[in-house]
Amino acid sequence: MSDLKQRFLAMVKGDLEDIERELHDNLNPNLDLVADVAGHLLFSGGKRLRPLLMVLAARLCGYQGNYDKTFSAAFEYLHAATLLHDDLVDGASLRRGRPVAHSLWGAETAVLVGDFLLARSLSLGARTGRLKVIEVISAITENMSQGEIHQLMRKGNLALTEDEYMEVIRRKTAVLIQGACQVGAIIADAPETRETALSDYGLNLGLAFQMADDLLDYTADTDELGKAVGADLREGKLTLPVIRALSEADSADRSAMEEIIRNEEFSPEDFGVLVELLKKYGGIDYTRRQADHHIRLAKAALEEFDSSETRDILLYVADYALARRA
Image (cartoon, rainbow, N blue to C red; front, side):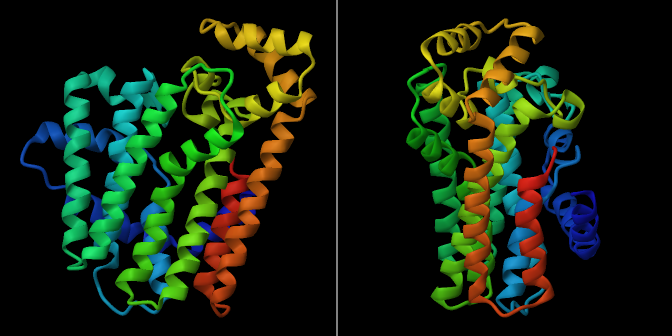
């Protein structure tokens, strides 16, 4: 995985440098406080996956303009806005290994800076001069909000189904990655078949990315993850490894799992017991298989395009999404 990551990063080094510059140049708030709060999250080591995907999708479709990097910043601003809001809703303490914004500046400021970033993403989208881009970004925002509300409604509910889980992660995570890829095709004036192919690629990549992220809560340590291990469970989020294991466990082990899950103050030892039960009943392996299935679907969507370096990079991104450790 290290070799894959290094090869991929070398191929997109220039793109990432350009994206980073655009993120700085287009933030441009009137108040230093807004810059400080937004920058605390924006410039804390994010992968820039979403803007990079928009740039790569546009290039794959033959985009000839000079503003793809500028437009791509909208997707990182939108992503950062949702993280500011989500951290507050979830009562999180760490993000990317740093204290969350609301713990440093207060809930009110974190919410309002998130709102600013949402507005800035729409402003950048408007500069494309394409109504469809605004429609895509607006739909992303609506979906992500409803996904978060759905998750809140089912917080800590042990009856959460796999279908509900899939709907939540589609709205909360996958639609943003899907939209970034779709907008890349739109600004390149790609035919509908190519726009659909990149939309399918982004959707399946996003689903797999979130499943892989949910696995890390049970397979990584705090230094790798950038947040406390077991944080999802403490926040009442039942993800696929747990949902699957609960459905497969015998009555005694299911009761033991439920007792740990219901106790928000579970100990590291309790968490270790739960992880072993997730392994015993196939929750972790099943989630990996499902993520792999969506990665294969994402790669298949790229068969619409001829072989090229850009297509290879998008294939590497898919492999990385599944293999990453943080």
